[in-house]
Structure formats: structure tokens, C-alpha cells
Length: 276
Length: 278
Image 1: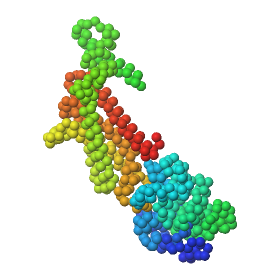
Image 2 (image 1 turned 30 degrees about the horizontal axis):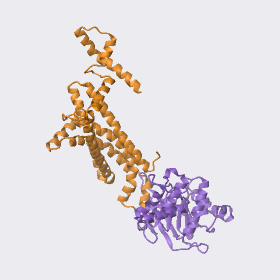
Image 3 (image 1 turned 90 degrees about the vertical axis):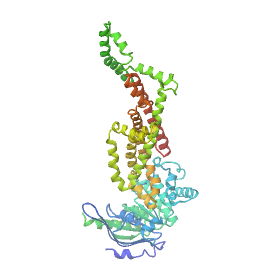
Image 4 (image 1 turned 180 degrees about the horizontal axis):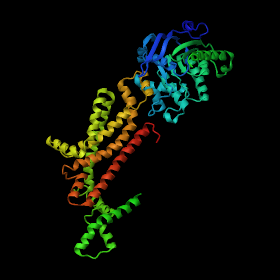
């Protein structure tokens, strides 16, 4: 449908055109369920370059989370081709190429904040000093200095999710996969964390893939928005979002912002029209 | 609550012991009044139901007045039973955890082992206990070991059930997280499954420690053991020494409560260190 968009490089206006990080061609995924097979992903074609902030947006059941899980090697595609950092997702996972932030913080309740952040580092077999150093650095990045010894239940939902972001960052991956990380938070906390995330992206030059179903959130954060529709899950539009990298929340009132938001909404509507 | 129990108990002692007393009075042609009946009912030498103060006196005599090394000291007997209980509890804990780890990690064991574990618990322990004692006695094992094996036989079950549930308690997200770190099976076991199972383990341990005490006492009954709480119960019933039986029962229940309490305190400390909201 929008084949030209997919192939089109996000040319001049992109600040950071790097090498391709994700390359997906004709990818399909069908879940075998007891009653009928579910076509979760249909003919997905997508390229993501390093340094991009890409949002997957769409209604529930459009396969955005599944697509992210395929990239993370938590699901195996039925057919098609995918590379992460030029290798198979499995190899990329084994080399710990990405950090994954889930919908829920998924902190281990028996570990303190600091120990939670150190969990992946322990598994990687880093030295104790290195573990402590990285935990301190990344907790500072998400503004959680002084909470090292607290346990997860002593923290608010937003703080817990920040710990889980620090945990993902502590692996020091070039690629950050975020699956509706702020979905369960109130709007004020969410705005605040969005700003923090944007600054983080700007500072660290990481590639971020972000799943959301909020239009303003996707436009505010992204350099590229992938609009998806359900049954079967497929990409219906890829929109470049060329707002400046150091944007603030105020930008949400600007005409450019509203124009992009409008196009995203149109895309989502188009995906739904033949369905209801 | 305690007061109510005492009132019921004293009343029960009069009711249950009066038949015996009245027939006694009539045989000896003794004049008797209600007051005399009550007094006698509460001070018989071999009552059907001894009154609480009689048990208290007996307890005082056998717990505090005797040297603890004496064969007449209940402390000595309680210690004999406790040592068998603790040994059986340790064996049972290890066996229970081992079985659970096997069941969680090996699919074949999951399907093949569970029916056996459950079947083992449907056999009445009183039927199998003498068999175990006889078989072990034949290969030269006597004393504490056979008793603790019966104790283990009873108490591994709740631990297996609790630990299987505990080791499987991590949710999908917690497991996925480990996968994104490409953690090894051993790392998933030690860093996720084991800590997640600790609360379940302690819940099972509390049940198991009480059961293993029962197991140790039951293990003393069919052997004609000369020492241990079970032996006191046995000799008491041979000679109609109901007061002795009741005081042994009191000691057994106090012991049981003490053991459960120790487990509970350990639990509190362990979970406190693991960030529990105490």
C-alpha cells in the first residue's frame, strides 16, 4: 500500500543517518491456536537505521508487540527474513545487543533497586565494581539517586518503570526495545518520563523502538512512526517525523506536530474502516 | 477461650469419671455426696479423663523436678523425639526439594513421579511404619534413624508440592526478562526460580515440621521403644496411666508449637532480608 514509504530513506532531514540496525523483509508470523491459526504479522517490510527513534502504533491486536518480540527473539517468525545488527535475532540476543523494557516493570521483588539494575550485569559476569559503577550511573540517568537500597514495593509505579529502564540501559546496548513502557502510568508522569526518555535518546544516540497506542506520545518521541492495523497485523503507513531532536512538550501545540498527528490518525482510521 | 476450655475440661472430667466412682462407692457401700464425687473425680489415680491440675502436677514432676538425663524426665523423652524429628525434617526437606527440582526441570519426571508421590501419601502411615522399622532393623539400622525415616516419609510431601508451585511461580515477564539476557538454565534457577520459591518453601516447612513430629512419635509406637514421647504414650496406655499419656500429649503439642514457631521466626528473618513488607 505504502511500499514507497518503506523503501524511502528518511533522507536529508534526519539528523543521524547510520547503518541499518533492523532489516525485515516479507516477514510473516502465524500462531497456531486450538481453534484457528492467527495471522499475527503479515508481509512486514521495515528498515530501521541506527540512531532512529521508531514508534510502532496501532490498535490492540495489530501485532506491534509481536513484531517487537520477533526482533528480540522472543517469538520466531513463520517465514521471511530478519536481521538485527546484520545477524539473526537469536545471535543478536545471545550477544546482548538490546535492552528490553516491558509493559510492566518486571522488577524482582526480592532484590533492591540497585540489585535489580545489577541483575543483567551479574548474568553477563561483570566484576562487582563494574556492576556497582554501572548501576550508579544508570540510576542517575533516570533520576533515581538515593533509592539504591529501596525495594520495588517502596517505589511508585513511575519510579519502578524508571528502574526497569535503568536496568535495560545498564547492559549498554545500542538498541533499546520499549513495549508500552508508560502505558500504565498517569498522564503527568507519562509526560515527564517522555521528556526524560527523549533527553536520554539525544544524549546516548541509541536506536530506540517504542511500542505505543498513544498518538501524541508517538509523534512527540519519534523520528519515524510505523502505523499498523490488525487482522492480519500489517504495516499500513510509515511516517517520518522531523521535529527537532531537542523538542520540548510545548511542541505538541505546533502546526507541524498537529499535522503529523493528523496523518497518524488518518492511517489508524484507514486500517480500521474495512474492519468494523 | 482458655477459660472456656478449662470449664469444659473440668466438667468433662466429672462426667466421664463419675460412672467408675459411683460403682466403686456402691461396691464398698460408701456414703457419697455430690461434693465428694467432684473431689474424687478430680483426684483419681487412673482417671478416664484427668483434670488439668493433675496433668500440671505430673508435668511439674517430670519436666522440672527430674534431672533431664533421667529416664523419668519428660525433657529427656522430648529430646529423643525431637532429635528424630529434626533429622527426619532435614531428610524430608532435602528429599522434598530434590523431587521438586526434578519435577520442574525434567518433563518425564513431571509426568512419572507425581503419581508415585501422591500414592505414597495415601498409604496409612500406621500400616507402613512397622514394615519400615522391621526392614531397617534387619539391615542393622535401629534407634533414631528408622524413626526419622518415617518422619521424612511423612513430611517430604508438603515440601515437594510447595516447592513445585514455588519454582514455577515466576511469571512470563520475569522469565522473558531472563531470556533477553540470554541467561543459562542454572542462572535462571538460582537468580529467579529459587528466590521466587522461598515464600512457598516456608509455608510448606511450617506444615512439614509439625507433620515430621507426628511421624517421629508414630515411629516410636510400633517398635516398643523405651524412650521418646511415643514410648511414654505406649507405656502409659499399657498401665492405664492416663495422666502420663496426657502430659506426654501436652509436651508433644508444646514441642510442635515450638518447632512451628522456630520456622516462622526463620521465615520472618529470611523474607525480611528479601525485601518483604514485614
